[in-house]
Length: 227
Image (cartoon, rainbow, N blue to C red; front, side, top):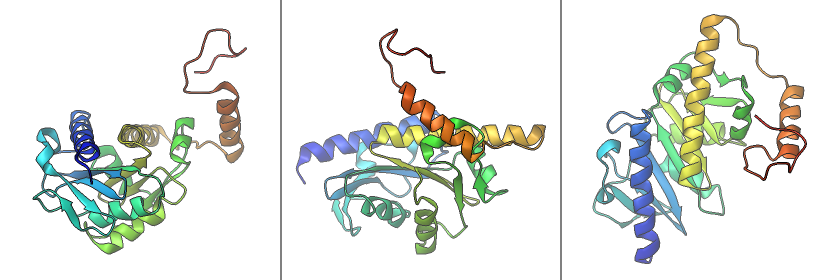
């Protein structure tokens, strides 16, 4: 591994951890982050505090989990991360947090229904992976199954995990999931939530494709305005 990609990846992981802490997604050492670097993975060390994380708290491992660079032990959730990286040919990024509303929601439901169309960015209904002790092969397997066809999952009585092609996207997905959990909680407090139907979800996808939803464009380039 050349120093340039490794140094860049380490700096990205540090910046992402600090942003996650600033947004209230983690408390202290609760969480871990990884970024694919070619055939290797840059990942936070066990016991690292997100808010004060520094570059020495990020280590480099190969896809079998062997330590390649760094002096610290990787996070106890190493296998959870590596399984996600192995499932993709291209390098990806993974963010695992203990975001509070997500943790709360994970204790009362097996799935997070689609109450808002932005949830479709995560693949639709979010699954809750069954509980298993942290760092265990069972937990990793449960999470990998819950992520099939999805960009994020909840972990029962534990937290959440999100992934994407970059750390910026993976963190965006983690933030979105926490917001969706907040919407779900508030809706349940007011009554019985009304999820979007399959037909309504399909209509949203078609509208997004037609209007290039989420992308800036020149005024007058379409006849309709997205929200």
